[in-house]
Length: 101
Image 1 (cartoon, one colour):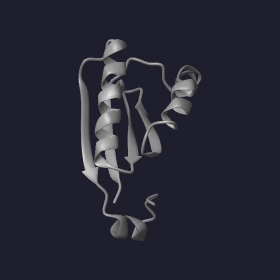
Image 2 (spheres, rainbow, N blue to C red):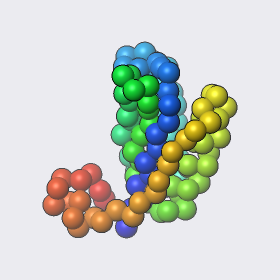
Image 3 (cartoon, rainbow, N blue to C red):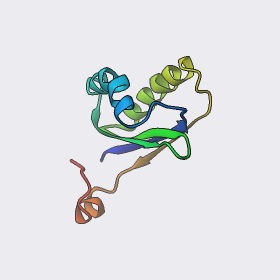
């Protein structure tokens, strides 16, 4: 069973191509996190929000990454981080083409 971490927060930018340029190194470093499987980056310039959907091998790995990521966001001046961890129902997700192991 895998665990999904959903994170969102207020974000004043950058967005789009500028976001790619600013966060490519961070994106690459996330690949090295313990238990990390994948991430989908999210952004909404209109509502000034950003975040991501992550998949981790264990709930502990998701919690540990969330703690690290929240500290990083706080260091950027982002105080209000919204996050939830869910168990993934692999069998139903596969029926709907979910990218699960």
